[in-house]
Each structure stands twice: as structure tokens, then as C-alpha cells.
Length: 105
Image 1 (tube, rainbow, N blue to C red):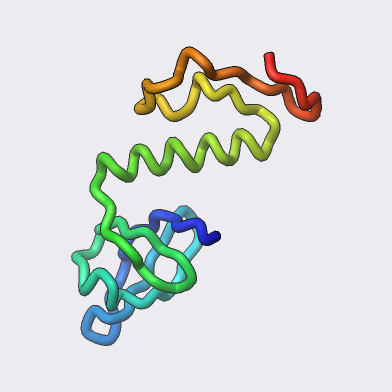
Image 2: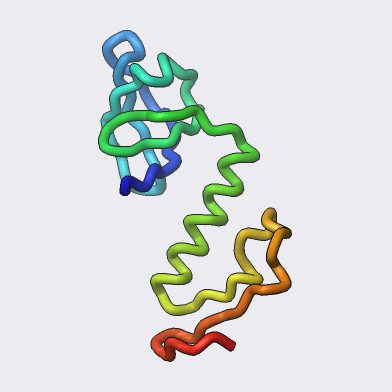
């Protein structure tokens, strides 16, 4: 499974077929053929060297929240009630699991 990461278009090359994109300090050259040339500052989802999709600001917020939840989960500091605030369905069934215990609370 591939995880696509949002990155901002910083520079265009080869008539817009390639772009330098960035996220934080990370820079990457990606193929833009799936999304076409995009204006500088546009956010795109990137996986395996390809920009797969243009991302709106609203989508970007949701994706960043999901990535923060994933990072918190990997750090063992995850409370599902603090993440994915856009999801209401099933919220009453959410439990948390302290890191390393294997026990929901």
C-alpha cells in the first residue's frame, strides 16, 4: 500500500511536466503528467515520484489531521477522540488504547 503525502509545488520544469515540490524541509522532483502543470503554491498528493491529485485547502486540512493522528499513533500518544474531528459516525464507540498495553479503555 502506498501513502500519498501532500506537497506544495515550488518550481516547474520541462514545461510543467515535472515539478519540484516540498513539505517542510523535504524537496522532491515529481512527474506532473497525471495532474498537468499547476501554478506555484498548489498542493498535490505525491506518491512514488508522481503527483496523483490536486488538493484543495479543505482537503489539505483533513489530510494533515489524518497524518498527525498517524504520527501520534506511532508515538504511542493516540486518543481517537482528538483526531478525525470530521467523522461523526460511530464516535460513541471510540475507545483509546494506551501504548503497549493491548487493552482498550
